[in-house]
Length: 322
Image 1 (tube, rainbow, N blue to C red):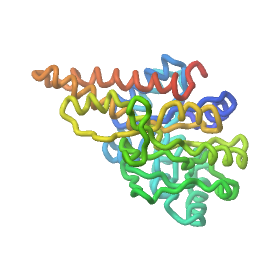
Image 2: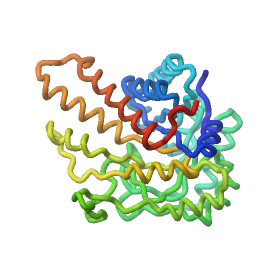
Image 3: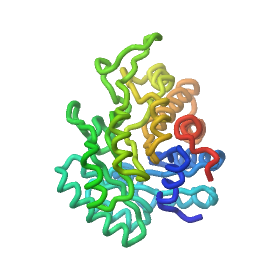
Image 4: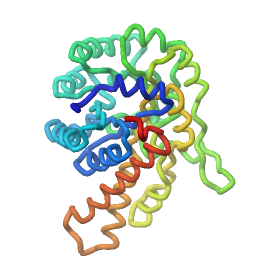
């Protein structure tokens, strides 16, 4: 099948009590690892492209990689989504260039300005069969070109969501309930230690999610900044020459809880990068004479595939849904 929008994906996810994984892509190996896992597990998938990734790989190359994935896995619903679009012009370029979904992120702007720009993107996108994700509330942390300083994050205000969705016409809404961008989501002083001495971040604000759901029944909600930052890969990176102190992510059981509710899309980025980088570091340390990129990118691609498969089954619950 050709690229699809997220409309049908989200309806089935909402009704089925699971979420669709949105995975950021930058190169061939990441696209292959993600779609191989989705194909084998019969799961829909969203391939996300940030503006940083678009600048890195260039639009035409990314489009052809995604087109190849569609050919390889014709039975898998695949949506191509712009992550954190920072302007109408960027969203327009992606819509005109073949994306089936775009995010316009004006969450850092005043409420009325957020509505105005989001509505402009929605009008342009809907006229061309493309869906739009918007955002209310801001997440702390760093992801590509998105930077929100510590202390500047804000939870979504449930009393604003009905007006925002009605006036903008957006198709899904990203909310802030305590997730955070990047691998360094939480500082140690923000966390507590469990009985095993492991740092545990503060719990997500499910009360905010519940109130948003009451005000927007049946409407698809999105979570950004939802990587769990697996400690085995952090340790592997550090063991083989890296330096990643205090990289703390979102507990997966909390993400699974969110996926059973109105959350239809969960963004996962850092976990893939950690798995890939850790695997490359380990391979090169154990094979110092190897220089062919195929030698170390093959196991890196497999690590991506295994990470995505784990997320699909154990976090998203989207396996065997197509």
